[in-house]
Each structure stands twice: as C-alpha cells, then as structure tokens.
Figure 1 (cartoon, rainbow, N blue to C red):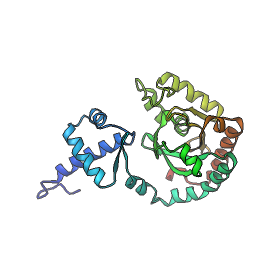
Figure 2 (figure 1 turned 90 degrees about the vertical axis):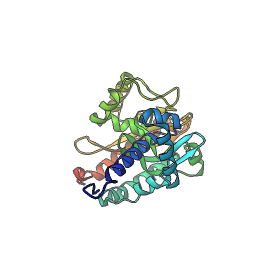
Figure 3 (figure 1 turned 90 degrees about the horizontal axis):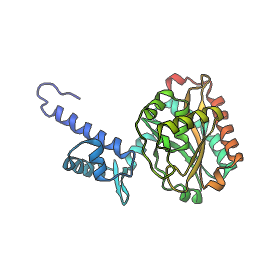
Figure 4 (figure 1 turned 120 degrees about the horizontal axis):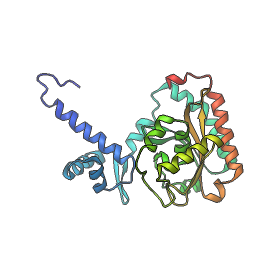
Length: 260
C-alpha cells in the first residue's frame, strides 16, 4: 500500500486493517462472545463492536446464538485452490479419503495447518454423519482435535507453541488443558502413529487421526474420522485410518514437499 506523500490516510487504513485481522484471528477460535473478543484483543469495546459490524456486513464473520464465528467468505477464498500444487495434492488424496469413508461409514476429513489452527479442506459425510459432526467448525483448535494432535506430534515447532503455554483452552470437561499431559499424549501418538480424541472439542464427538508424512517424517496433513464413540473408537477404524494415511504418504513421496 502506498503511504507516501499525498496519501495521508495510508497509515490509518493500515491500522484499521490490522485491527480487523486481529479480530478475525480471535474469532477463528469461535464461537466467541463480544466481551471475550475485547479481552483477548485488548481493543476498546466500541472499536471491536464497530469492526465486527463491518465484517458481518461483508460476510467475513457471522453472529450466532453462541457467539461470533468466521463467515463463508474466508472459506470460499481458501477453497479456490490458487496454488496448483495444492490442487494436484488434493486430486491425489481424494480417492483415498473416499475409500476410507466407505470402509468406516463415518465422517472423514483431511486436516492441515491454518496458522495455529486445524483447517479441514476436505470433508466427506452423508446426511446422518453431517448431523453427528455439525458442531465442528472448518477451523478447530489443534490440542482438542485428533487431526490437530496428529499434526502436533510430528511438528516440533508447532508443538512447542502449545507446550510452552501456561494452560490450554478447555472446550469440554475432557479437553487436555495441561501442557504436561499434552506432551505425554504427543509422545504416545509418535509411538503408535494414531491420535485419539474423546469428546474433547464437542460433547459426543470422538475422533481418530493419523499423520501424512514425507520420507523425512515431516508432517504434511492428517487423515481423520469423527463420530460417536461406539462407531469411531474401534481397532478396525484405527487400522483403516492408519492405512489410509500411510497410502497417501506413499502417493505423495514423489512430490516437491518444499514447494507445498
């Protein structure tokens, strides 16, 4: 942006955009109330309220009965697949996800990093499964989700950000909020190759996930299955998820990981 002589409004515009981005970063962890947004951003309440109004009008944020959440527009931008490498990767991955979905008969997802949250660019489910996982956002906290734990277990830099926190956010009584307990959980995931959540993000929603790794064991994504405990947390489902992640890992070994 040109902020040189003659553009006296430039710095003010930059400051406004910065506030909008800050608020959207906080709302990405939603649903979240106005008072919590004010507290977490440190911005004046009147400023937050005004910017939220603008973001709602433009479809960036939606106000629900539970609080503010990201709107449809950011997801449409993310799904346009401007990176041709990502497009190619998704084309190669989709058949494995479809096959896994047919085997486990539960909602099946691909999880990837979106800053320090988990994004689900691919989600497969039927009408019944959609109702079972309907509370789950397209962005979710890493420490409270199976795909997130699978990513953290094989991403030391990301894990350090969570493990160095004094306490992690709790979403249900089952959420791991202790960094010490999370560290132990991540060690188990590295040893067993499978991550599990027990209603840690939303009540009644359980999940298992496995990492997609390159030849150097760097994590690119995670394959997950979510639903009721009696259907999801079985040895057969864990085995199928682990096998699908391994197949995708082999499929992608020939790609240029440093460009993705």
